[in-house]
Image (tube, rainbow, N blue to C red; front, side, top):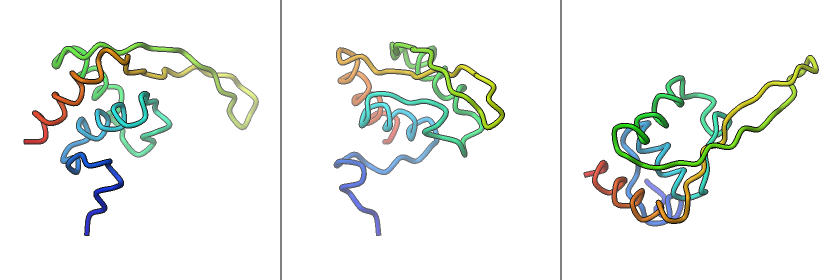
Amino acid sequence: MKNDNLFQGFPFPKTSEQEVLLTLILQGHVSIFDFPYLSGFRTRVSQLQTVHGLSLDRVMDKRCNKFGNTYSYAIHKLPEEQKEKAILLYNKLNN
């Protein structure tokens, strides 16, 4: 049985692209650490931007691995003015 509160009333995502988009809508940002199991994470983010025209801000951050080496990764943020467009896109993709 699906828990509707989990997705704050949004329909359950049916694709990985919808899952990334819904996470953007609900938490306002996504990074590779939100989807360690999704090998096409960067492709999904790129599709949202290039195919669907969603404008995202990208902030680079750094982490340190277990060997002490520093690496960079992107945090993709959904600007507040793009939130309504993202919700409409999610509903369109989910139909």
